[in-house]
Length: 461
Image 1 (cartoon, one colour):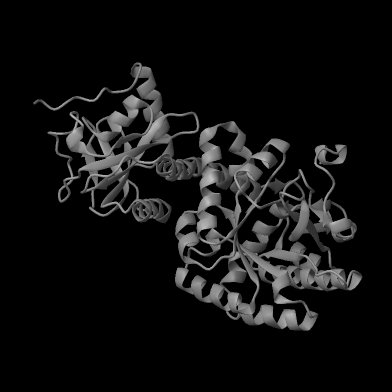
Image 2 (spheres, rainbow, N blue to C red; image 1 turned 120 degrees about the horizontal axis):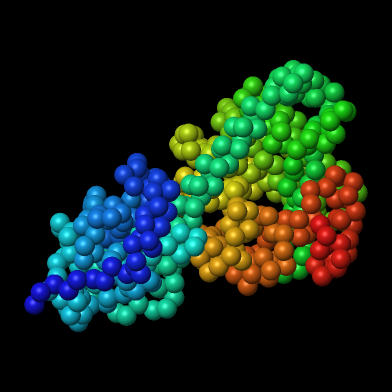
């Protein structure tokens, strides 16, 4: 019997040209391995007990393997490939037993050491639905028909891969904007702020902490606060962190500024506890820079600060981004372990925007992950962004971690997150970052429960 040809699955050449243009914009072909994609294939292999898992992206003639688990495969012909079938179906393809499917019965797959008898493949799409690649699991044994929940899990993992492609574009835009911002030239004073400006701000105690509540989504009860630094400049007013933190990082002043922020947060926690001795103070989370995190004796410094201020370690949370962990994963594990032994909470901030999100989630001892606001903002744009958030929440649940969704700004986002089972969140819908005095008033609310979200003041935040 001649081998069946798969339909190309495109309405015309323009559609394929648009798909190839979208693929080129990701810069994904023929690139070095990335831990995020390897984590996706590993998780798929573990979940489905697969013999081989391939994550590949197709150009005009080839399917290029970005990541694999099992048999190493670099690239495959696109003609008659599973990618062609997924493209033609415009969706997932499941074949529980190749011997029962005439389209595959006499066809051998181009895998050197594996002659699979079953497979399932899910599309990896752009935000507007173009199929760039597939996530495919192979088994040497026939499998029972895939349950709906299993297919959704495979599609969810494919959606996470799609999210990583989209974040490539976002990172590039963000880095470009940041570079332009850091090189802004003022006519009179030159680059501002200078190192001397930041040192003077420290000496004159011009930095202040604002706090943004983290709430339990089902009750709107304040369960924690994130401490966020601001610069109260005598002439320029309140300056946001993006206007001075990059220069602080570059000049090394981020260390004394970070130490000040950590100390100030602990003193404020002690003050809140004294204002209401009957209630335990809220957990306050402080962001650590990459330089702070790589500093020798970080755990000793935190322990000494807790003893000096009399704050319980359970009240302190330390947030770090993935970029602060990547340079030396071995040291990261050691530092996190020493902090964990102190009893402080460890939070992985901006989850999803780094190169090794899933890898870190799988191996490092975090208590909480914070879903990056870019995911939350896109939740209402379609099923794919929503599925990415759903999968992150489920993965965290399986690993025994709490989840905080960042950047909640609308009731629609709030209700979707609740339906997805996300327990905690923060964002302008509940409260903007506020000075300590305003937060003190919030903490005196009955049960620390914020007003009904339908109230006018919530809608205008």
